Image (cartoon, rainbow, N blue to C red):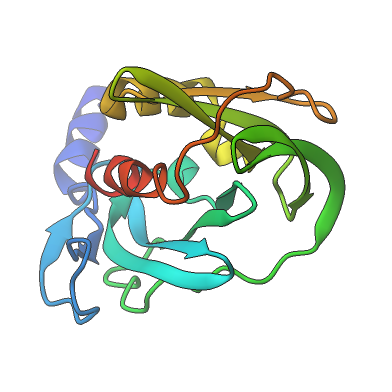
Amino acid sequence: MYLLTWILCILLVPKAYSLQCYECLPGSSGTCTDKTVCSDGQQCSALRFMSYAGGSKVTDIRSKSCALPEHCLVGSLNFGVSKTTITSKCCATDFCNSQPAPEAIKTSPNGKKCFTCDGQTCTATLNCEGNEDYCVSTTVTVGAEKVTMKGCASGLFCSKTATAEITGAIGVDVSCCQGAFCNSANSRSAGLLLMVAPLISLVLFS
């Protein structure tokens, strides 16, 4: 009797519900007609990647798709003269990602300080903002020379998974630490937007 009841329950319970979401490739106009079905555990998401140089916006890229909840994050990578922000918005009903992710809100200094690069040296002070609670150093090989950028970063960019993915995907060494001015090694600095394009590629196409 119990076995028959169990079999009937299995047969009568509807199939697992699959969430449907809008999907837009990076660089689209923002009007999404493509649709996708998410895998188990995923939600609908909208992602926005913005970069600034000297306070002026230079990049604003948006995409939509499915994502795991742990990938629905907000963070920034701040080198002082240039800053990259990522915002995301996730939801769990069909096609709920119709609106784009919001623009990153203006943040205030949080009291943490890190070294940043100014010209050919990396001894200037940068006041970290918002949830930038790490100091960061990135090293890029340009020709036969290694150049470095330093600044503040959110945990989004500093997890072991993220730093491994950055290194593996675009060949950029990323080192994060916690503590005032912990990124203290002096190096020649890289060009203003040297890190922006590789990070766009990593976040949106990996």
